[in-house]
Length: 283
Image (cartoon, rainbow, N blue to C red; front, side):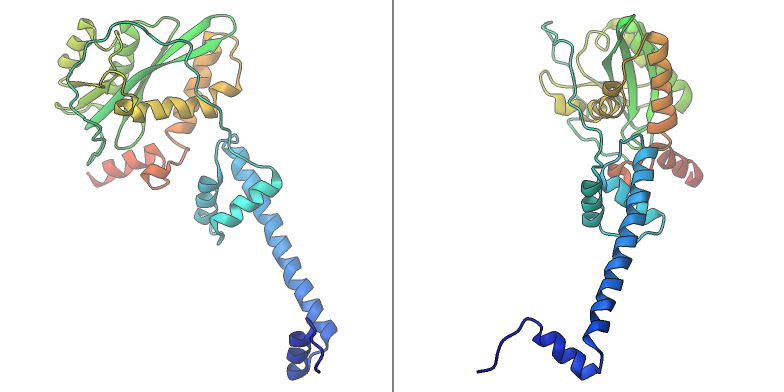
């Protein structure tokens, strides 16, 4: 009976090619060592990209960044190398300081969760979020987001949550973007957005107001998503001393990172500013 051996195929191959088995095994070790060197180089680059994003990027965005720089690597390999190196994106849950029990009256919803657009300055969303500081307590950020570019086109930060806060954010957006008449501005049913003063300001700029349905956060999902990202990537990882420190940090995050450097999977791994600039170039 012929004796079976796991080395039989290897022996046959070496015999056919006239190659000593020792040479064959050395070649395997050489290939493995090249692979190890590639993994070390990739891991080093992954750490560089991850650090530059202040630990905000996960595997998909790091994978895209690597490909953009000419690396031929699969997403699974990036995920494995990140896991082996203990690298992961910052992820923390969103926190609400309290929920409002104020009675809410339904208003017209022009969007009906139709977030599709053909260009910038067609549909904007606005919302308020809370940011805590050690000395000044809770402060408030009002943001305005363009649904096409995902750019934060206007924002305002204040120690008080008033109608003036949301008007200022919208005024900043209007002055920066100069949209044509007919733009739809979608918000939730918060008292600042349903106030008569805010409605008059919106109408004076030729905009149409649209409101989320009561108890339906999906109607305002895009701006909610921005505020969630802001908290996951920045706010929940820092203790701001006071209002001024938080204000400077928000400026750096929104203008220096989110709008101009952070790539977004939903817009083809481009930055919001890239999307806007491309539209202006082709106009």
